[in-house]
Length: 211
Image (cartoon, rainbow, N blue to C red):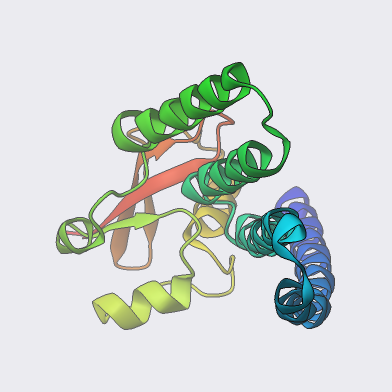
């Protein structure tokens, strides 16, 4: 029990550190938007020979800001799809700014195709939120209070902010193993683990009412 509280405290501290880092990055992106606006002036003032280079830098800067935004989403939500989207933008920026030969473009296109393949066929997160919600499927990173509001149910709120944290706390208190197919009782409901991420984190769960 004491170990579970220590783990929960450390998790809370890391969550706050992530939030602080995300805020700092967001501030940097906002400051970057100010410089981004000056590109319009440079595009208008540049001659025909310089326009291509200036516009390329303009697009590269835009993608860099988008990468910063996607990085914030990845830090906050720990979502596999957010990571893959971040990779896509990084590859796109690399192709746009640094690709000089046809082999660079081919390799970049191949890398993007691989990411799209993973997102389409290998990503275990919900592809269709509406269908998944009808089946009471949720992501491990979904907040408990949001799930309660959406389903109109009551779940313990003192054992973690997300469903994954709630399950981990229950598993720690009951000495249960976190694995695919495991079922945990939270109040009047069962939370079943449907899938785990490659890193062993809780990815998808299903909530059902206890008989």
